[in-house]
Image (cartoon, rainbow, N blue to C red; front, side, top):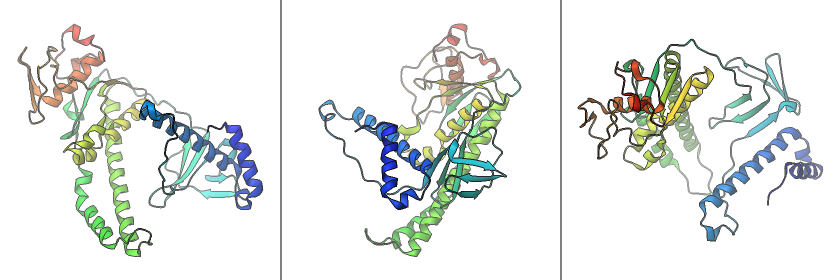
Length: 346
């Protein structure tokens, strides 16, 4: 059953009349919660129907039972105000906020949520503002990988594998063993020792995630500052989760690094071309010839049988990104491919 927003509002009004504890809270976040739920339910129904075979779509999909999630409330413009550096929410709630940075504009909404460590955050929605950087006249090709997170057409802008997860693996395994020893049967409350070990493991996971995000943002800032346009492999790292390189691929955080680069380019008005990754390791960046067979991962040098050009495999792929994006690769190793290659579709 699909309900319109007005129907949800009437249902909430009726529920507040007959439920005293619900009426004590502010109606603004309650309205937004049920509207967010309606959108999520409609999207989930569509995704399930798209995945189901035709003969099963007529039935009602089965919903999986989920545990309670962390608190998260969304306040629209009439449900909050900022005054003197403090955040005032509907219902007479006043919060002292530790600001990470100044807001670039007037916020239209705010979401107050709790993370896995129990820390509370306020995420504001503000209009995006472009902070243009001076033109450099340079372009860059980026190829993602596992040995090096990003290999580019410029040696100075390569991103080596930081291995934040591998460095913390020993400590994380220790906390997980502590949790396994203290785990109680299902249905029983966990002991204090189990909860302590769980909190330590959660903090370590959070630290690793922040280290990866920090590394990605610093690299993206340097790349965007030094180049006007970038040709980036439109890589989907999900398929690596089923390979023997799954753990190292996850530690490389290719998805987070790509996201940081796109966000930084959007912020500073730079151009990013997303290039389809098909056959990028098989094409020659100098003459455009394609090998008859895919190169095995153990072969790290691409040697063209047509023109004889030899270069590191990932470096050649990064140059192919520039060619497919239609960018002028003059600044990449000082070699410019023939004209017809530049017209290749991205």
